[in-house]
Image (cartoon, rainbow, N blue to C red; front, side, top):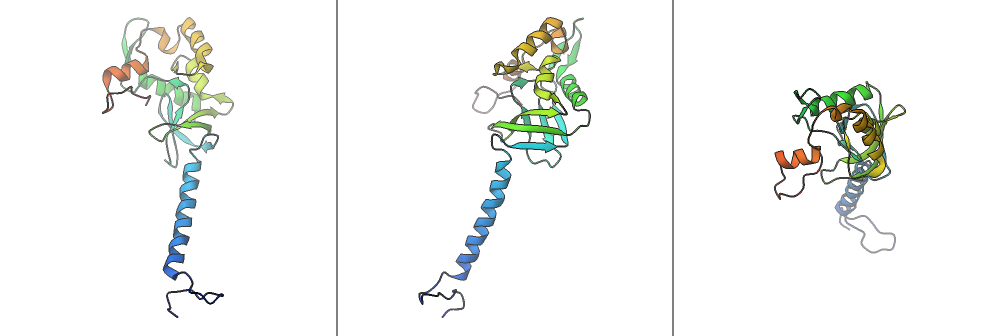
Length: 191
């Protein structure tokens, strides 16, 4: 009997030991992959300390994957807007600063609703009892994006003339399409 084969109880030749070891490694690798991917499955939760990337994106402290706030679109860093006096300002930086002020160092809880083509978790997130998605729209620093859930909050911010609505701005989606495009030239997804 070869030293590379496991003895069989039935008398037949068993699987080679290298094959058994390879199978075990495959099971371990698939388990680790599944645990990493499960974090991105719809309905999964991500919680803890997160860094604000921009007005609608967060990054967990472990750097595992980015989280995009579902249903909203905030201006991009570097996007220029005009305030009520017609003065030019970087509304993307203002939106990021506003999201940072809402988070205020608190831990964040996010529920993944979807995953986008960039492997970002599209989520509804809370800092304490505050829903970040809704609050950014209600405070006027983001617009409702492809979901009716935040349209009322957007309307209220617009009527009050707060945040972006205090002056003039390009919708973030329009600004992106005018200022950059992907290689295929298709519609640019929110960053």
